[in-house]
Length: 371
Image (cartoon, rainbow, N blue to C red; front, top):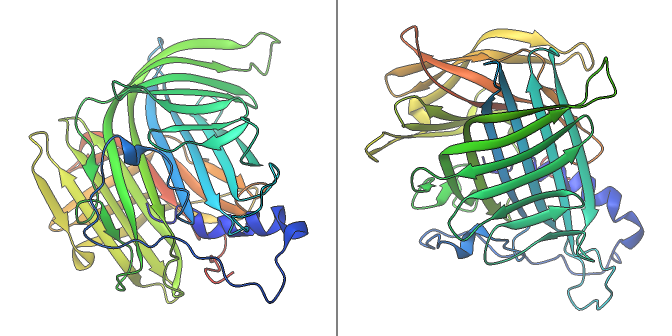
C-alpha cells in the first residue's frame, strides 16, 4: 500500500547522506506530484519514476514444495529520490537510493528468514530503470519480460529465490484508475496498481542448520505484486497501517488497508474486491475495518501484533490466520523500521477461501511522518 515504509525510508536516507548534507540555505527539493486523472500506462509505468520521491515494487506469495509443505515469500525493491542537486555530474552523486528486502516464511523453522540491502544507484550495481520493470541491487533482481512475466533472483543470507511470476489476469488499478487516496486530502495519494493471481514456478534453496549442503526445492504457487509511486507523506495523525493483499481460490482478488491514528481510530481506509469475472466492488473508509482476534508478542522486540484478525468490507467479514506467528521483519539496517509482514490464510463463514499477505506497521513504534 501507499507509503509501504516510504516515510521511514527517510531515516535511512538521512543516515546514508549525512556527509552530503545540503547547506541550510539550500532550497527544498521539488518532486513530481500525484494528481487525479493521470492514467497508468502499460508497460511504461511498470518501470521507474525517478521524479517522484518514493517508489516500490512489492511481490509476496505462497509457495508449495514437492512434499506439500507451504512457504511464504516476500521480495521488495524501493527507490528513493534524495533531492540531491540534479546538476551534480559526479558518478558518485547520491541522487537515488535503492533498498531491497527479502523474506522466507518456513513453518519448519518457526520463524521468518530475512535479509536486506541498501546502496546508492550507480555503476550498474544498483538501479531502477524506466520504461519497464528492471530493478537491481547487487545479486538481487526483479525484471519484467516482454510477455509480462517477472523473473526474480535473490541470493540472500540463508536462502535463495529463483522464481518466475506469470500473469493470469490483467492488472488491478487501485483507487480511481490508479489514483489511490490514502487520506482525506487530495495530495495524500499515490499511483498504485496490483497484479494479483500471479502463477509462480521456480526453485527455493535453504541453507541447512544441520548440514553444509543447501536444500534446493522446486516450487509452485501464487503471488501478488504491488507497484506504487508518490511524493507525499501520510497525515501527521497516522502511526501505521494494516494492509492485506489476497488471492482467493475462485480467481478473485481482495485488497484492503486501514491507516491507524494516534488516538487509536481510523485515519483512512479502502478496499477493493475484483471477482473472477472482472467485476469490481469498492469500499469507502466507513465500510472497511480491521479487528484483532489474537495477538502475538515478539520475543526479540516485545512488540505485540494482531497476527489473527478479521477484515470487514461492507457487510462481509474475512478471517485472517497466519501461516506462523513469528513473521516479524527487522529492517533497521535499511529502512529503519520493525514491522510484521507474513503469509495468512483467508476464510469466510468458517470456510477457507484463499491465501494472502498481511502487513502490520507502526506497532513497534509510531512512525514519525515529519522527519
